[in-house]
Length: 101
Image (cartoon, rainbow, N blue to C red; front, side, top):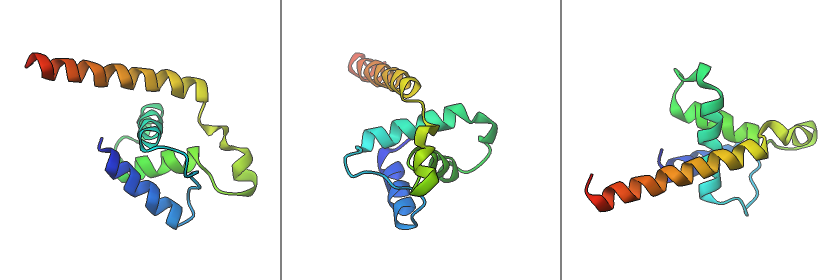
C-alpha cells in the first residue's frame, strides 16, 4: 500500500470532517493504522481500498463529542505489535533487495 495514497485519503477525510487527525500523527502511523484496520476487518475485503482505508482512519481518528470518547476503536497495544510486524517485513524486503532475491 502506498503511503502517499493513504495520506491523500486522510487529507480528504479531514476536509470532509470525517476524521480528525492530529498534525503530529506521521504518515507512517496513518499507513500502519490503515493496514491494521483492514486486517481486522477482512469481512469487508471486497470493498474498494479507498473505502477500507477511509473507514479505518475515520474509526481511529473520530471527530468531536461522543465519537472522541469512543476513539478507543484502535487498541494501541495491538497496533504497536502490528507495527513491529510491519517493520520486520520492511527490513526483510530491504534485505532481499540487497541480496538480489
